[in-house]
Image 1 (cartoon, rainbow, N blue to C red):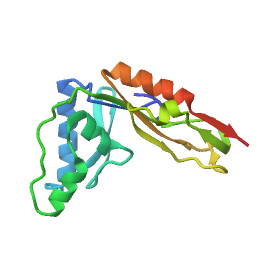
Image 2: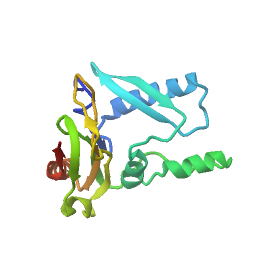
Image 3: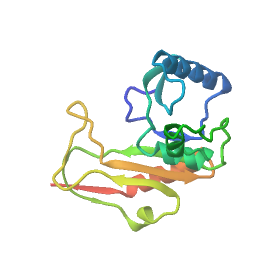
Length: 183
């Protein structure tokens, strides 16, 4: 729980306690039912505050930003296939959460402010078999703004590991190797 979303990253599988996970299920279920969603793929965003989950967003859609890849890697769940099954009137292949043993850490890539000249990603990062998500969105001439003027990101990076700490360490190491030159 930080002051901004910049200090938050994705990691999976969840490290939430059974109590917190139950509380999240209750909040998401209430939000889904309030919208009439009873047979749908859903994307929900939750934020904990003072130890309680609060629903920030819920929608009848698959989560973006690599969340489908995270579900496949860490839980062998394919949200895209579930969307197709629901649209075709078939029951989707879902089950209770069972982690695969692979951990991930993923984040938005944040740089200093300025006008982008070039973003360089070393081969060590771009060709790593432990990188499952690498997308550079910044292009030459793009203006990167930082708070309070804006909140521009330069891309996304996700790495796998044998533990949460291992995945985070590699993600942070690789993120530090991505260089942005400014005009």
